[in-house]
Amino acid sequence: MFVSVSIQAQTKIFWTDGSSGEIESGNVDGTGQANVISGVSACFAAAVDSIANQLYWTDFISHTITRINLTSHVTTVLIDGIDGIVAPRGIALDVTGSRMFWVDNSTKKLQRSTLNGTSITDLITTGLVSPGYVAYDPVGNKVYFSDNGVGMKKIMRCNPDGSSLEDVVTGLSQVWGIAFNSDDNCIYWIDSGIDKIQKGVVSSLPVTKQDVITGLTGNIRGLVIDAVADLMYWSDVTAGNLKKASVSGGAVTSLFSGIAYPQGIAIDWDSALPIELMAFSSSVIKNEVILDWSTSFELNNSGFDIERTLSPKEQWTKIGFIEGHGTSNEQHYYSFIDRNLPSNTYKYRLKQIDFNGNYQYYDLQNEIIIEKPKTFSLAQNYPNPFNPSTRINYELTDDGKVNLVIFDITGRQVAQLVNENQIAGYYNLEFNAKNLSSGIYYYQINFVGTANSFQKTMKMMIVK
Image (cartoon, helix red, strand yellow):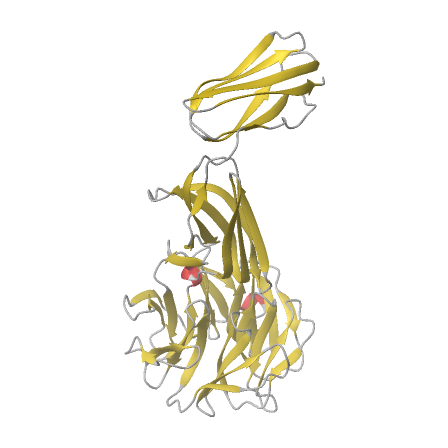
């Protein structure tokens, strides 16, 4: 069992105002509205690279794909008419793969390039009539795009190289936004012709349409999903505002208002905490703690810091790191062994970190008690034979004076490893025999406590 606590920045949402020629932003709770950039001709769609803190958008009037660094506010035109694009519309990013995808409504193409606008590649060049919005599935590695042309009215998908073109949703009226939800493996879309937001599970194509929100009014456009928060956002041109709801269609809320012509919409995934943890458990073998956990879904997962504290002090210390699996919808299992612990009571937690630097804690609910040994012991050194180092383990049931020495075959003492008072517990030390020659040696422990004493001798061999 586990409990979780998340630490993350406020999620940002971005939208375009086609009338005022601006791109604006705000927090997803409806606060912090601000201008990002002015002087945009006709931005149709936008997307955010949260790792590099860059916002991308398409402009079908100026025939460009542009990005702005959200920290430095430096703007760079990546692709323009010289590169052959005429009317770029939808755009989607694969940040992990360092590539972006877009459709050109004039040349009737689905295209791809690097995030810097280089290596432009045609993916789909025939059969399209009026392509519009684009979405990317990072788990299934599929590109989704809509086509509102006569005889089309559908959503399609293909591989990032343009292969395996498939119909995903057919028989639509007017698609004005699509978004992929990696959490439930569904494509979501706005069909403004029937005033609905719908979805379909993409495991079987064409998908079965499911109504999410019905009875919408106005000119609704653009759609984006925060899969972690189970929320979706869209814009309403008629009302001049942005709206949000749960991915199940509940709790519809109006956010920012007074926007002349909101259209493109994007979310900053900087706060997306990208795993679904199924289990987090522990087991104890003497003075070793074994931690096991598993995930059913990972998105942008860098990995896990393992942290430990003495209960109840709560002064956490990082004791290890396990790499995650990036983006995956498969189940993954993890394990970590904390060795050679003194007798005490411990608490553990995982600090899951995404590639954006966001993190979430998962606390192991139960405390771990490393009990005192029940019997005195001196274990065989390992490795044995050895050169030049080996490890020696011993266990004390009581507090007392410990003397641990090394003898050669004649009985001459050649090293003293311990000569001090020690408390009951488990001990592990390294013996380096670099100054000794090959041969048979003996190590002996002498323990004297207030109520008990213990002595034992073991043989070891140095081979050089």
